[in-house]
Image (cartoon, rainbow, N blue to C red; front, side, top):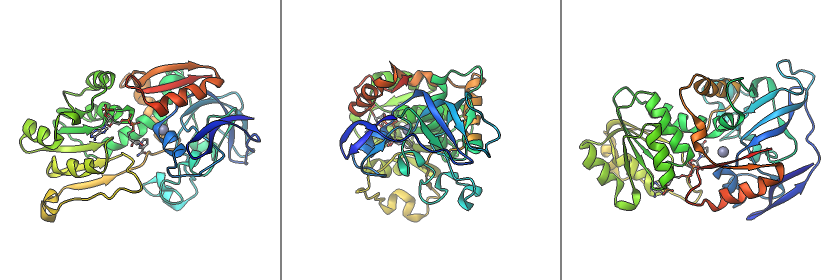
Length: 349
Ligand code: NDP
Ligand code: ZN
């Protein structure tokens, strides 16, 4: 079969591989709608994961082609939403609170992490009964593909930020992940939502999702800007973009007793430094959390419920639509180049 991926670090192209085998608990799926992601481009350029001969892609809605003989909930022909993280539900970590780290740090990210991804004619899904969700009748595949990483991750940023009614929340970064955090922050009842970003269409969507104020990191120190606007600082800050310096800024703009919630990928070479005063000399009761995209069927079912019941419209993230399997290459290159007008591209097969 054909797939698009990483030939070696920094070199992408088409790859020929055997169709994946289906274990007794698993499924083989063919894609219907795919979305490239900044995590795919990170891996291509030498980020975490295998370093060569890897089919990329981890955001997909597809059609089941084959199921293992122990799969009871799905059959060939079913249209399914595929979480980007597909934990091994037999591991003890998964049975605890944090399913993303089933067999080690971020190990539930099987696509790209430990096997080929979804940019292929066929891809493998482990433990299909626990990791696949039927596409609801009133949710489009385009809207659904935005749940599997962007929405689950952006909303996780909100969950870790302890947002309460009337809170002032800063969302640093309004790419697709941060935009979902803005939408989730509003749904959690925040009063004021200050979004940090510059791309005009991201700013527009941030306002539509509920941002009450927009500030730019290009207009000077964002800590100063937030402190001028809020006096004491924010109740919570969600980091969904930026660099190592952003970590310190987020702590500095959070008021004592507040929460800092990170979903941004820092670089392996980064050191996250925090002056003691930022943390109130250790006495500020500021909680710092960082989390990875929760996966599995229940999580994505809940995200789909938000769409199905009209709580959030994820299609606002889609700025570019490509048609046909062969267009994976063009869509991926666009994601890698990240032109100013891009939020998320999709490929409709
Ligand atoms: P984007 O690159 O699309 O968006 C990044 C945002 O950060 C943009 O709004 C950008 O502003 C803003 N930004 C850039 N530099 C700064 C800065 N110095 N200070 C403040 N803001 C800045 O990224 P995505 O939305 O796709 O992803 C966001 C992060 O989430 C990435 O690091 C990604 O790898 C990570 N991620 C994490 C996952 C997880 O499970 N934890 C899962 C998926 C992604 P501008 O408008 O100017 O471009
Ligand atoms: Zn992704």
